[in-house]
Length: 149
Image (cartoon, rainbow, N blue to C red; front, side):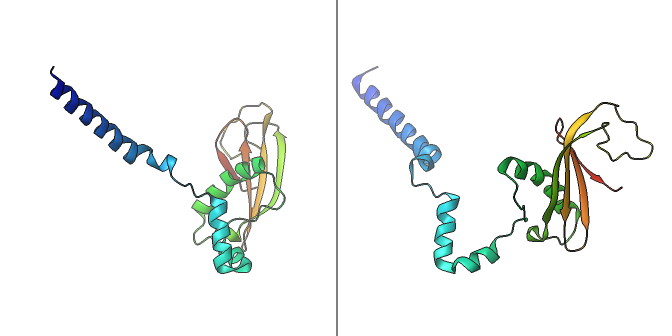
């Protein structure tokens, strides 16, 4: 390989590397806008009361972040099963960590058989303008059960 081929190869390698950095890695190096910064900008433009009205989220009450993540699983099921529901219409009426006597989570369905083991989980009651929904979640699984009892 002569000197000219080496220089051309080096130039092409640097050009490809620069293109890779620009297209795939550049956003990590640029200014980052966080959610809080965006919210603060919106509050300055709209005023504090307008921003409160624009937020579309459930009313969690005094739940901590860990509990909110658990409750969000039940809210997702409710939101995807009830038509014309707005997130801001959902209120967490109660959140309780429980040990259920069997795998039915206290909501046995007729004709079903459940493992007779103590099952740790949560009972979450969500309210909307029209009704209440009693959800049960086991700590050991991702399933969310609507209790009709």
